[in-house]
Image (cartoon, rainbow, N blue to C red; front, top):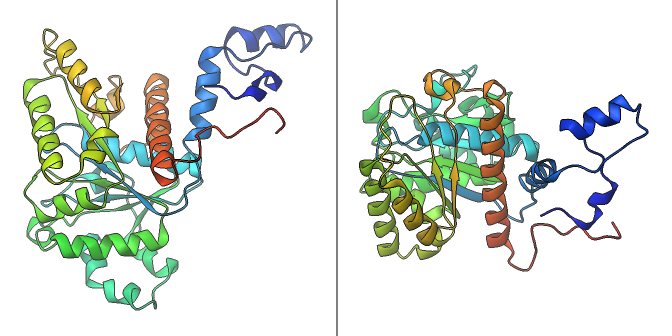
Length: 319
């Protein structure tokens, strides 16, 4: 919702902006509803937090869209927070986050960081030392911790190893966005669930995707993470040629609306569907807007969890 001070704003898009230009600024209108909503989301995507926090992007069904959601959510959060965000490929096998994001100077991965964990655990390693294990993304101002290309190496990362890596990243980043992999039974998956503050559930409207997400929700309840489910954001993605169960989709949407906090839609985008390296600035405008909405929703949820006594919109008339 727009803050009380929005009467001082002038429209910067749409017909309102065109009217202002046509009248050489003699007529200046307030932003419309859509522009105010965007401005609210841009502000909230960068909400300040008091501690490092973790977002888990999880659905153990393959091709659910986890990796694009991780990369593009990290990009929108990094852009509006001015950095301080890392996307971590925690796949128990060979993950694809490193393939879907910009190449770094160094081919190092999570396994390499684990091998050097003692450097940071003893306090000898700083931000500059961590840089050689990450792949910086100029578009979005975030970093990527990629998984190893050798799936046997990734299986070395269990619960304890995940916790060591998480502790290191938490020293240097305000937000950790985790791609959780495809096995609910993997120790590194349960570790990601243990450390998560907010859950994002990507899926498509097909029986296997929906059923997998529901099974995951059941497991999270059994793990005692009712809070994670209650505050979860469900994200519906669309892929060209993928069947959509239009008969059951309304019923499924109602189920996720009842069992999670939000259900958001990401429109089909050829840049995502191409399977190549992702760059936020190459997304279509509606897709960028959808991810901004997702980023703001996640950020507001994190802020509410971080300090329930603060609202997401602290602006007052006198500010």
